[in-house]
Amino acid sequence: MTAAEMLKKVDHTQLKAFATWEDIQVLCEEAITYGTASVCVPPSYIKKIYDTYGKKINICTVVGFPLGYSVTEAKVAEVERALADGCNEIDMVVNIADVKNGNFDNVEEEIRTLKKACGEHILKVIIETCYLTEAEKIAMCKAVTNAGADYIKTSTGFGTGGATKEDIELFKAHIGRNVKMKAAGGVSTLEDLEMFIELGCDRIGTSRAVGLLKGEVTQGY
Image (cartoon, rainbow, N blue to C red):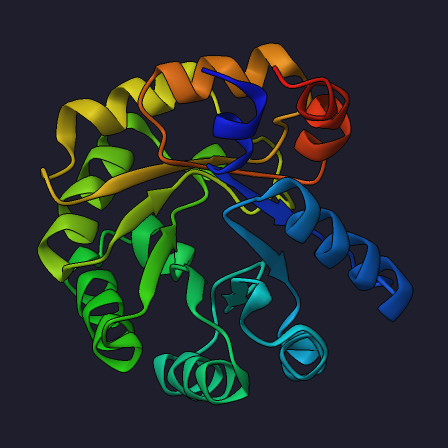
């Protein structure tokens, strides 16, 4: 796989609390130049990005981020506002407390509700694997599949750990055929990027991929 092909699977990410508009502009310009799948940005920047770049760029944002314990109604409101502002893809954080309490029906229903709010737009479900047991991860694969979400995603990048080979392999064994995988959190080297793509991830969430690969893109690799 070429560098350009790998970048087409990258959600080019800037979610730091102190990200300035200048930081977001750099992110967007890089995304356009190097053809990343999207930019993943704070909700407060969506409208300004859309007003500045229009449909030149695919905008992804986060909902219930990073802790996930917002009530469902608040998450729905976030989704509706994000889509109205020009966003195309939503990465939601599940209610991790519900997962830990074994309330998987509640989690599944929340995902289903947010997918309904997204309509034809992509919904990625962040389950924050670093906090979950293997049994809980498997239960979340089932919930994400049953609720009709488009992706299962490993991590926010703000927890105690990020994506691992073992978690992606576990996802592959337990998600439905219509669910894709996104690895995020700690994807910091070219080897990481290549590994997760080879394991079957359709998206990679990282802020580092463009820096790792842009030299190779400009050289035609």
